[in-house]
Image (cartoon, rainbow, N blue to C red; front, side, top):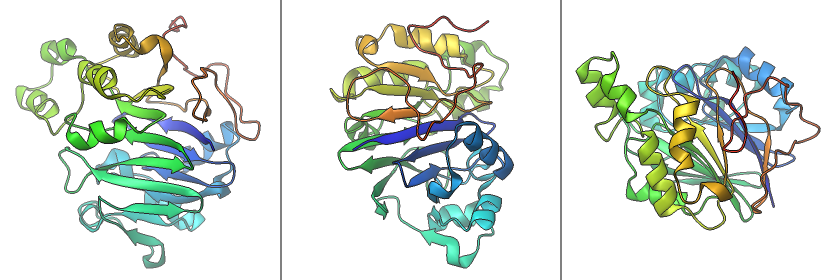
Length: 286
């Protein structure tokens, strides 16, 4: 009755999230290369043979870059909607192509992967909740708005990879063209730090133990800014809040339904001493 989770990379340069039990796992998105996925799993002592499927949230390159090579090399089924498959111009083995709808719930061994539609500037975007028995973990990135679906599923999760893409002041004062700024914050782009905090404060369940701030913008946010915003949240003291880096993996976390704050490892998974693990109780690295 637990899930082991890790971000292998999170940001506009690539997104990939590992979630599984002791025998089975799935990847949500494969936006970094097959080689990088292999290297990061190895550093965490996560067996790639445990991965049974890859689920794709939408067609943008930072979510699909490595999926074709990974699927081909390891004969991994890829779950993707018809519209996303077409829009992504992917070439997947027909025997490994598994099409689904954004309202489907799919069983992968003892895991259940529930998809739901979201607001984002893609053809058929969705987010996912991965469950093992009574424990559920959400992957909610590339979300333009805290819509009813996001709020409903957020309440059900024991842990969430939650988008905190931009700091509103940094975006406003930054060098992006006005049209791009509007696209980011128009309700179909990305969530700001403040929007993510509002979701946490208004719609988290009492059993939420871990929140991983994800898909941070390189130009319009920083780990320090994101964490500072979350420090003001009334619930923050009871939740382990960490930043999912944009250039390396996180530790492996055990989500077991308790409110424990520690990092746990699957099968002796290692975490490099220079791994970026930021939380509200640790000093930020120089």
